Image 1 (cartoon, rainbow, N blue to C red):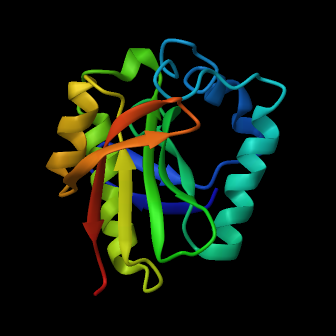
Image 2 (cartoon, rainbow, N blue to C red):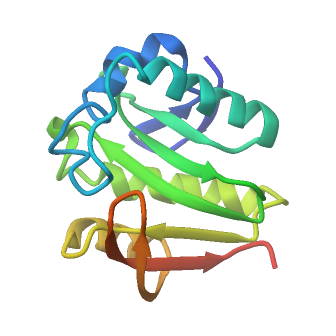
Length: 169
């Protein structure tokens, strides 16, 4: 297990292929992924997890498994999509439905923002949320991201509130 960072209640670690069934509880759930382009089929998840593991190896930053310390279970994912340059990374987080409403998204997102601040190659954190998804918008604001504009996203097929946070300037 490659531990990345932790908070009081959560541990973030690199995904392994063995996490596919746990990841199916959030990335495979149509309700969880309704505003994020839809669920990922379970047979695709091992490749997704491997791509995030490889991203961590190559860039030192990625999307990570979120472990609830009390239970030891993978309850979600949080971290950064890296596309092209490390200078600008996209903060994402998804959690299994039974973990909603417990403050885990804010806690994990804050750990991720702290990680990005420690990474010398990252200069801008971006994020978006589904229109009207007030809990996700609150998370982004709580961890310091600022609203910029409504922006079109091809992957979700909609305009979404877009946020940024400059780091390491």
